[in-house]
Structures are given as structure tokens and as C-alpha cells.
Length: 333
Image 1 (cartoon, rainbow, N blue to C red):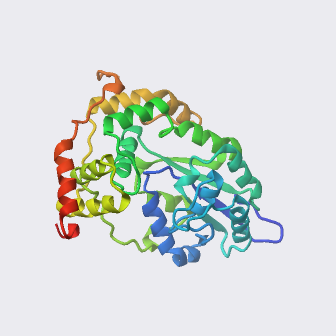
Image 2: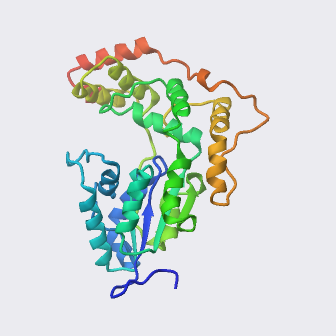
């Protein structure tokens, strides 16, 4: 029998879905939480411990020493591990799944703390990665358009900085930390591009997707114009409330699109893949797989620090910020 049976308890296999970011995690987590009862009837528990909206971020926050932005506190690792341990011990099913993309970059010592606290050694780590070029582009679009943060870099500077520092796409070190604790045979590495995350994750944990109720969700993003207006508001030093006023007006003025509107040409994408190829080769080799994210050697590579994404019309966007701030009801524009 593949799973571990605890003395005096029922068999429990724990799946830990660790992301990473921008690989369909939110959609999967919403679907899982909204179908918790269906999952239990299928033999899988998606527990409400370590809970943060639809996921298990509180445990991940505790592992990383981060504050919970919703509850305005910093979860204690001892408390979150105890809650998870109790949930496993009381699980009504043979399988359990917890999910947080924040797990992906947890410190090695905290991953060890997690492993030591679990009352079962039957643990499967499920990790998704994404092509580094599209990952960086998606991450940029998410960061630049949000009024609550101060991120206001242009795209070319962001990419050059991300590649120079290596922290934004350090898939290799993150996965090495999990592999060193749980073992390569306990990690399932998947590529985001292989299929819908809800479907591939459901197959891994043994749930038929036909049983899940999935709400139709828009795959549309705020437009590049709206994002650039928000970026201009942040560059102008506006307070958060004013940024949100601008955000509402900008998204009303510029309709959402099926993609973020930010673009990298083929040569730039190729340069990104070339830059991270050694790490990605090592990552996939450690799981006996070829690296699917490789640049085309026949294309001319260029200096990544000179990547350009046509400088936005900063004056026009600044003027729009002023216009939206003066409007009596920005949401109606």
C-alpha cells in the first residue's frame, strides 16, 4: 500500500501544493474551497485550518515570518503547525491537500520544521513552474497595476533587475530546499503550460474534475493603459486612497483585455531564457527531466540590460491622473 498508516488512526496522505506564483494557484484554490464538501465525498479533505481566504497562507506566512494582511497579525509557527497536525489527526478522509504559493520560497529550516511536525511521513509536494519569460511578464503586470504597493518600475528595468538579482525566478534554490527535506521521490514537478491547473492538480490528488462545480471566471486583465495610469499615480507620490480613485477611473475608461497588454518581443524572450538556462537545466535534471524552457540558438541574443518596452507616454498618463482626480465620480467615467 503506497500511503502510510498511522498507528491507531486512518491512513492519511498529505499533498502540499506550493505554487509557485502565477501558475493558476488562485483559481485552483477558489475551486477547491468552494467544492470542499464534494472533495470530502471523493476522499480528499481541503481543511479550513491555516486559513486565509481560499488557501493556507497563514502557515506559509508563519514559515516566512510574514504578517497576514487580512487579519493584521503575524501568525505563530508553533500555533499553525499544531493546527495542521490536529487537522491531519482528525481527518475524515485518507487524503488531505493544503495549498499556498507562499510555501514555494519558504526558508529551508522552516521546511524542516514543517516536516518534523507532521504526524505522517506520506507527504507529496506538488510544485508548478512557468516559462521564465511569461512568468516575469505576468508578475510585472500584477505588481504594477495594484494601488496598494509602491512598485512603479518600467518593464525593462524590472526584467533587468530581476535577472541580475535572481530572486524573482530562483526556481532552482526553492525546489532544492523542498527536495532536500522531503526527497526527490516525494516531489511532483509540473509545468504550468501542460494544462489547466485545476484539472492537473485534481488528477494528482485523485479527484474527478467532472464532479467539481467551477464558476465561469473572466480571464481578462486590466489594460496596459489602465496599468500605466496607476503606475503614473504611484510615481507622482499619491496616497493610497487617491491611487484607488485613479485605479477605478482608469479601469472604467480603459476596458479590460484578454491579456495584460504588456509585451516582450521574441528576441527579448529568447534573451531571458538564455540568461536563466543553466539554473533551469539543473532544476529539471534534478528530477530527470529535460528543460522545456530553452532559447532558440539560431536567434541573435542581445544585452538583457538594454531590453526596451517602448517607454510609456508618461506625460499623457500623468495628465490622465490629474483628470481622474478632479472628476466628481471617477467610477462613472
